[in-house]
Image 1 (tube, rainbow, N blue to C red):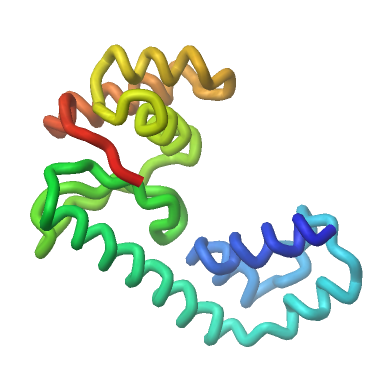
Image 2 (image 1 turned 135 degrees about the vertical axis):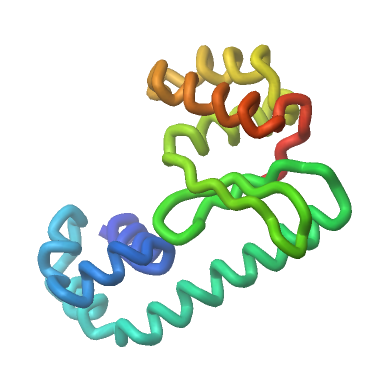
Length: 158
């Protein structure tokens, strides 16, 4: 129950669309979580406006940290929370390129970071082999992103 309570809060903090849905119909949003009635009341009692401000603060802090990394390196940065999904960020710190990605693609990139840290077809195929839940479509999407955006050979940072 504590896990689901924390997971529900995390999802509200990190997903703009979920927060909007929560504002309209909190019961439907909380239904997938195994919460006690006391936990449901506590979450329903949270001011949506403050959750929205907190969400923007989290994203702003993460983007600030990402820009600092981009100033000092040529890395591709995986942002676990960007609006409604993870994102890859690279380029000039003043105007970084932000590409939202799926959770499964983020898992592939995170695995690349953990094992080699460099975006390449070899590291991508290794990550795909290690992760049983990544689809072939995710593999192709990452390859297209890597080679279509000129990211192959660049280091990943999380």
